Figure 1 (cartoon, rainbow, N blue to C red):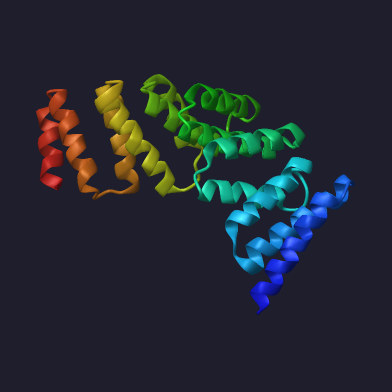
Figure 2: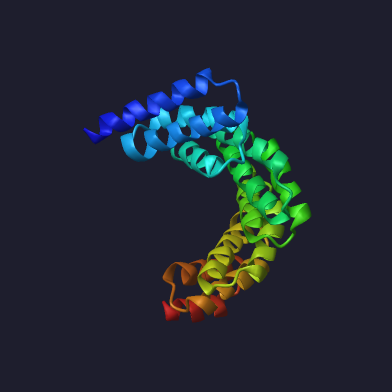
Length: 231
C-alpha cells in the first residue's frame, strides 16, 4: 500500500544520502527521507535519525531545526536539545531570535540539572534584552528553584510591571506574596503584593486568608478582623 511505497521511497533517499559525495545532495536526501518517515510512514524514530543527519550537515536548512527541536522536546531529550540549540546559536545573528534560543537552551539545561549553565544562558539573554518577559520568567523560576530569593524578587518585580494581562500580573503578585511571607520575609511587602492580587481578583478566598495571616503576624488585629469579615 501507500505506506509501503513511502517506506521504500524513504529508504531510497537514505541510500542516496549515504552514497553521495556531495554535501548538498546528502542534505537534500536526508531531509527528504526525514519528511517521508515523519509525514507519510509516521515512523518518528527513523525520522529523528534522518533529521539528525541533515542537521549535522546544515542545521539551518529548511525546517530541520524546528522539527528536530520539537521532536527532542517531546521526547524529553534535553541534552540533545541543548546541543542542537547551541549549534543553532552559532549561526543566528538576529538579537530577538538569539534571546528566544538562549531561553529554550536554559530550560533544557535546567531539566538536565545543569543550573549554572542555565543561569549563564539566561543572564546572557537578559544582558541583551533586559525587558524580555520570557527570559525574566525563566530566570525568576530558576532563582526560586535554587532558593536565590533576591534574584527571584528582582525578576518578578520587573515582570509585574512588564506583563500586559491582569491574569499574568496576578500570577506574579501571588508568587511575590508567597516570597515575602515565606522566604525572604518582609510582611509589609507581602501585604502590598497580596493587595495587588486582590485588585485583579477581589474575592479570591485563598488570597484573603493569606492577607489575614500577614496582618496577624504584624499584630494588626483591626485589619485582620476587617478582612476576616469579608471572607
